[in-house]
Length: 309
Image 1: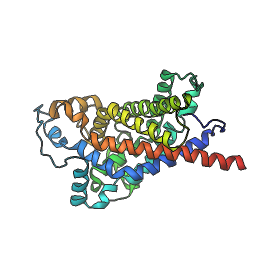
Image 2 (image 1 turned 30 degrees about the horizontal axis):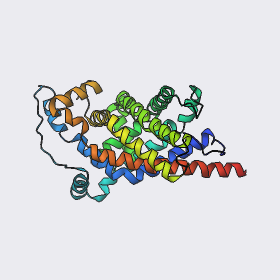
Image 3 (image 1 turned 60 degrees about the vertical axis):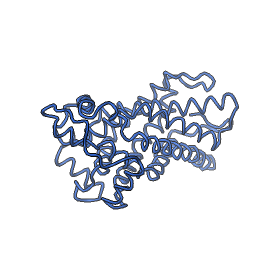
Image 4 (image 1 turned 135 degrees about the vertical axis):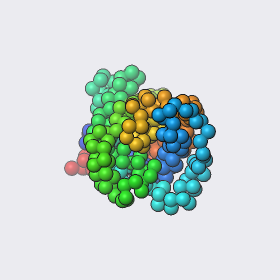
């Protein structure tokens, strides 16, 4: 992602730290919307679980959550207002790990692959770089994703509100495989998210800077982030739904993420892949705006500190 003209390029360590902190702020702002999204996505799951063995198709399941606002209200009424923030701690753990790697290392990997000319952007190499950092992030930090999803779906299953207890519980009951459950599905999702989120942001921002239509300031960051959020939601929603269902499912429910996707289609229909689309878009749009605007400012702040010493 391009630096302001005349400004020194921030170091890898500055980008790494800035990405993790910016993503943590965005996570804290958007976690209630994300909780509503998770509840919408797993709605109807009981129909699949009850019929996964006998193959009975059940598209008409009982509906508890309706829409983003309705889902947030229902969660607050039935589980308490604080339940909207279930998963915040593992969510921040996740962002400090995931975002630091997938966003903080993106420019370095992109340059390594040969996309280092601002005036001659190479889309394929940008996509390759984003997929690389996405896969690396999942390989390292998948347990934080599993704990976050399960807390949001039903935090009471751990008998504690502490994130550490969630990790211990998952490890005791399911072993290391449980902590990395859905890793391949999440690699697919995060690679897709990165390839749309980072590449779209990079391309939109680069276009406006090259054409000198906007300066590298808040308005450009906002426009680029909004475009990235919308593109990411459209492309990644089906993968996100399957990832959420698969990681939240009991042991031996699905043979694989692909089997989960097939059973979801069979029992809930094709529209199930876009369950929670509105809260997902609202969250991703807001998340991208908050994250990228914080990220750009934190990079400048830390760079100014380092230049003074």
